[in-house]
Length: 210
Image (cartoon, rainbow, N blue to C red; front, side, top):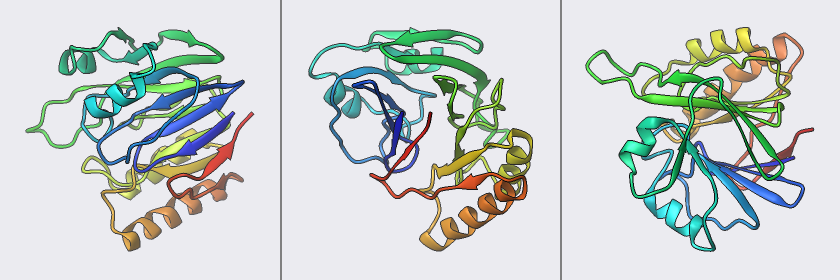
């Protein structure tokens, strides 16, 4: 699989001539894909999904849309396939397994919404906005690196549990450039401490897995 990072939390995964899009949100510029097989949305926040992105990606024709119930309620004009933790789905060459269930707490005054983490073909893990631990070992983990709901020490603790072989930072646009460099260094320190590697991808850059 080829994984291309777009700005913030959006990933485009290509495999066997088909494409999967994860979290096309408002911090991500418009992009085109070929042979779209499905779209996965981890939760309803606008930095992870917008109607504008969905309309553009779906213009060539409908594809399966996988998301938790909160997304289906927030964007009811789309034909969602609602998924929950432990659900498994398939779309073209992509085997999807879902975990977690809830967004990380931002503050006690803010309601906690639905969030599903997703594993693609048993190899790539995207947690959405959560510290969900993958249900099994995966090769490549997308690591949230800035958000109102996290501090970098919590990310480091999570990485010590997950222990990915390879990792790359996402969810970076809450940080300044210097702040993101600091976050990347902390992520790299932890992952390298147990023999893993970190690749920092700029929007549009890719990494292979599998």
